[in-house]
Image (cartoon, rainbow, N blue to C red):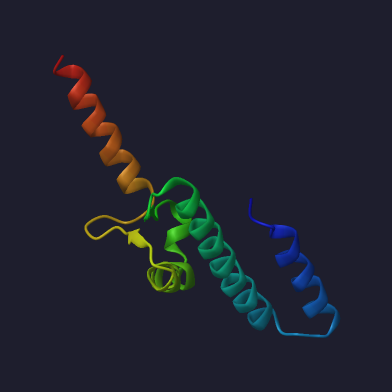
Amino acid sequence: MLDTLALFDQIRADRERGASVGRMARRFHLGLIAGLTALAGRLARQTGCRQVALSGGVMQNRTLASRLPVALERAGLTPLCHRFLPANDACVSLGQAAYGTLVAGR
């Protein structure tokens, strides 16, 4: 599990100190990247799977899309990232079309 309560507690503490919204958002995203990388590392040790698929609308976030793959690589993992289609609904649609073609061909 990822301890997101700690991330939100840090935002609260930053807000009480008068930090700017931009600074709070940046620290949140960097903390999320650190937490996701640590979680992926633990799961890799438990399962032996070293590949991490990065997809979905969250990967349209510039900070996550640029920094999470680098953090995963530094942790010895292989991030799988989109190259030809965006990480959001276009890939969902493509997957649905591929599945529909597969089912129709039976």
